[in-house]
Image (tube, rainbow, N blue to C red; front, side, top):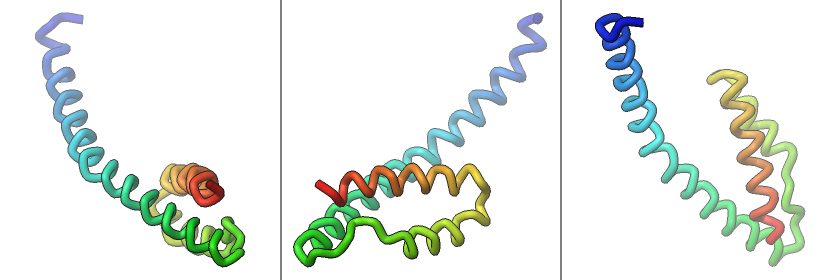
Amino acid sequence: MEFSKIQPIIEELDKLRAEVDAVDARLAPLIAKRFEIVRKIGALKRANGIAAVDGVRETEILRSVIECGDEVAEVYRRIFDIAHRIQKR
C-alpha cells in the first residue's frame, strides 16, 4: 500500500490509541483502588469468620455491568477471580 494511502489510517490509529491510553490512565488507578478496598474487605471477613466469596453480591454487580456489554461482564468476572485470591490471603 502506498504511503499516501496508509498515512490517514496510521493517523487514525494513533488518535484511537491515544483515546485508549487516556481511558487506561483513568481506569488503572480505579482498578488498583478497588483491589485496595477488596484487601480491607478480606481482612474484615477473615477477622469475623465470614466467607470470602459472596455469590449474591457478585451476581448483583454483574447484573449492573452487563448493560455495558458482555465484554465488560467478562472483565468483572476476572476481577472477581483476582478479588477472591486477595481476600483469601
